[in-house]
Image 1 (cartoon, rainbow, N blue to C red):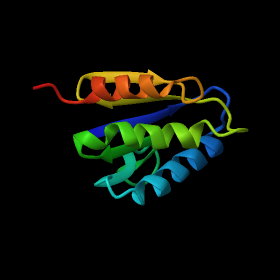
Image 2 (cartoon, rainbow, N blue to C red; image 1 turned 180 degrees about the vertical axis):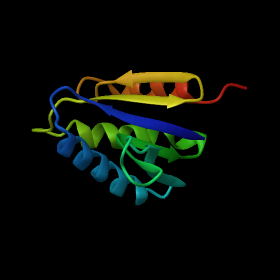
Image 3 (cartoon, one colour; image 1 turned 60 degrees about the vertical axis):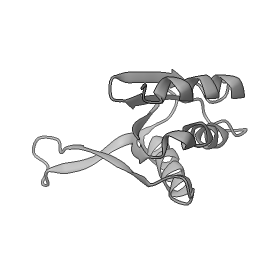
Length: 121
């Protein structure tokens, strides 16, 4: 299963969003259940050389369906540490999209989000 994780924040500048994305990327690369994690690519701005660039604050994550709750819990733990500026995550899979604030979501709500993201059938 592939999900896209987008970091949304009005309180972080581009450098801070990039640093959080890098921390999440490096952490998730070391989680055995994560099959793949990489920056999302988008077309380069007009006038810039190169066809694709990394999208600011976005990751593509491939995981087995049964690992989604654990991966969301890791993301929550990193983004809700004391002193971490407020962020909201938007997670999408196919036509399903959920958002959550890692500082205010309870463990049972993480499990409910994971259930929403799981493929049906």
